[in-house]
Structure formats: structure tokens, C-alpha cells
Length: 380
Image (tube, rainbow, N blue to C red; front, side, top):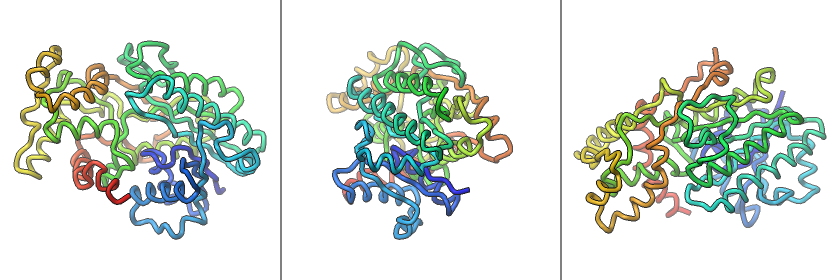
């Protein structure tokens, strides 16, 4: 049976990889992508560029039959597309994936709420309309594993989000958004999916945008960061974007186990790598590529990060240190995420999450080739 996916955030890392996966899996499935843009042409160009980055071999000329790009905005009560078109789309959409979000760690709470909370309310209103039309089967809300806040070390899938002590406005606004979504579970076919840190494709390194983990990695590889504010044995939960996309689609395809549950799209405690392992793997790669690596001089200065950093950072590096501070909670307070629900759904599918160190050379090489996204900016 063919499906029609309505995807928000379709030009983002997970959204674009998910779109590519849908287009490759079933030739009968179709996608309606809600994309921000000053005009239809600009929205379409953004979507096609994101798909091409994830799947360069795809024939973009053939996409029009299966990919409908709609210029819109989730912060608008009618998603920026007007009541008539909104009603029309609601009539034939079978699956909704709400992946759009602001992931900026330094954004104000007001701005984060405007996109993440208000945007989610508007998408859920569209979902209610689609549900009344009768064709809607599934809704996936893409949350984050870090709605747990900083108080917990072991986090279970069915744990409710934390209520306080968030690292930044992003986490708090996603907590508020997930809490709102949970209240809709009684009337809508919803599942909450909580990814951890998403990086590039495990086989190719491809990624739509270089954010989150790539930011501190880029600063470290450039030699601007000389110390990390954490012990090397702390673990970092990281997953590749291809794994995340496949898990979302697998869960969407399993009706009986789907509704009303929460799924961690995470590596889990057994697969997650230590920060020391990550740094060592990156150091070997840089040594192979350049004959030397700035990472060999990297210090783990916990607990006296401020004092050590002050000695190691000159004035030209203080901006890099300020950026690193945004990521300090994720380095200093490691989390262990339970994956019981996800493992149950994936049993027998052959979908397994790889260890980051097994594909880190691939994603780093891809980042270096593309100058951490600067080549794309030059071409734009």
C-alpha cells in the first residue's frame, strides 16, 4: 500500500536523509515536504540541494512525480500555506514526520519556544485535521534524548521528560514540545522518537549540515581548542544519520507496537564510545592525512578547565573557547540511554547501530573534503 509522507524539517540532517530513504525504498511512496523559502522556487531549490547532498546519484529530474515541495513555515498557525491548501493536504497525507526544530544551543528561550513549541502545536493541529479526514495512519514526533535534563545519568524510554535543570533553551523548549505531544497521544496515532547526537552517513559521511558535534570537532581539528572540560572516560552517545532514518521508517511501519510509545534513537551504553577513544581515532586519521595531528597535544583538563584553558588559550582562541562552553554539558555529564522499545522493534531487521569509532574516519574525511560546509556556501 502506497504512503504519502508529510515531512517538516525535510532539508535538515535527519529530514533529508529520511526523504532520501523513502524515495529509495518504495517507488510508490510519495513525499510532501514543508520547506521554508521566500518563494516556491527557493524552497524547491533548498529541498533538491539537500536531497542531492545525501544522495548525489539520485536523478533530481525524476523527483517531481514523487516529491511535492510546499513553501511554508511551521510557526504559522496554518503552516504558512493557507487554509484551503492545508485542508487539501490533510485529505491525502498518511504519515506525518515532524522533524523541524531550532537546534541552536545559544538561542534565547523565547526564540526556541517560537519554533520548537509553537511550531509543534501548529503541526499537531494539522495532524488533527488529517486525522478527521480519515487517511492518517502514523505520526512521528522527533524529540531529543536530551529532554532528560542534566540530573539523570540513566534514562529510560518511558521516563517522562525532565522538568528542570536543562543545559540550554533548546533542551527546555524540546521538553515543553514533547510534553505537549504526549498530551495528544490519546487522540492521535503518535510515537515520540528521541535521537541523541546525529552525525553523517556511516558509509559515506554525507550530511546535510555540519552542526552539533561537528562544531567542537572542527575547532579541535583546526588547533583552536587545546583542552576539553571532561575526563577522557566519559562516553558520548552518537548515531549516524542513516541509522536514525532507517529506525524512524521501521517504527512507522509497525502499527501494533507503534502508538503511544517512546523510542530512543541512541547508541546505548554498550555501543557508545568514550571521548578519549574518539579523540584517539581522530588523531590517527589526522596523522595519516597530514603527517601530524594537533590532537596529540589535546589535554583533558577536568576538573580545573577554566584554569587550564586560561593558560592554553591565547586571545585569538577565546572565541573558540566561548563556543566550546556551549557543548560542555554534553562532554561533562554523560548519559546512558535505555533502548528496550527500539530493540524490540528492530529485532530480526538487521538494523544495528555501529560504534562511532568504526565510521568516524569516514565522517571526518567527508567534513575535511567539504571544508565543514564552506564549499557549499561558496557554491550557493
